[in-house]
Amino acid sequence: MKNSTVVVIGGLSGIGRAVAEQAAAAGARVIAAGRRQASANFPASITTTQVDIGNDASVAALFDSIGPFDHLVVTAGPVIASARLSDLNIDDAIAAFNIKFFGQMRVAQRALGSINRAGSITLTSGLLARKAVPGGLIKASMNAATEIMAKTLAKELAPLRVNVISPGMVESGMWGDMSEADRRAMAARVGPGLPVGRVGQGSDLAQAYLMLMQNGFMTGSVVDVDGGGLL
Image 1 (cartoon, rainbow, N blue to C red):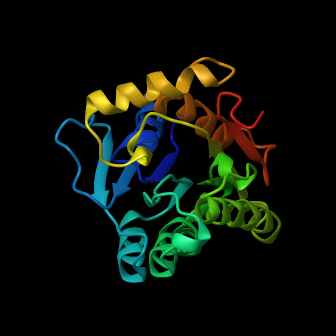
Image 2 (cartoon, rainbow, N blue to C red):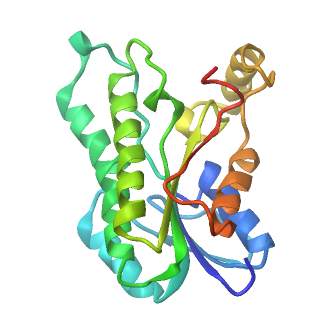
Image 3 (cartoon, one colour):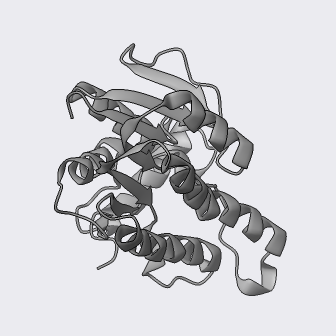
């Protein structure tokens, strides 16, 4: 990772922050961007900035300011409650798609003007793309669409590599706003039901993102990092 530049969208918290920190520790120059303002305790080796991936102008401004870079990671996504079809709010579903699916597409498109063609793009889906759960229609659809988008782009944009990480249950902001005590309680409740006996941490996922950046023979891959959640 030394002498490479990595852009992490969603890099101000959760999984994205873990990716940014591990990439920086491996010697990369890292730009971490997210919708909210960054906290004050980021390492000096990481440049932080803001972006709204649901907004074309915001995304364009980000890449105009960055210049050439080598690897793009997108972990940003909406927090949307599970809902069965009969209770689904279509406007909420459209808004979620604009972030999770079209947001990642928007970022990838804008990145083309400055990303190194020997580099990589790594998108983020989720295990519901391939695990049918009642109430999971929108999450499943967004994640499945992301996975086929990445496979298509892996051929269309070659030799630029395009891959996907599919997280399972990870103790992060993807659970929505909750207290630290509630987060720990949820992890303690859900973790024992997984084959590995625990929920994931951002650091678990970050290792997989770095692997995809560094392995030049991987493209069009969907890498499951879910503690056996799909089994």
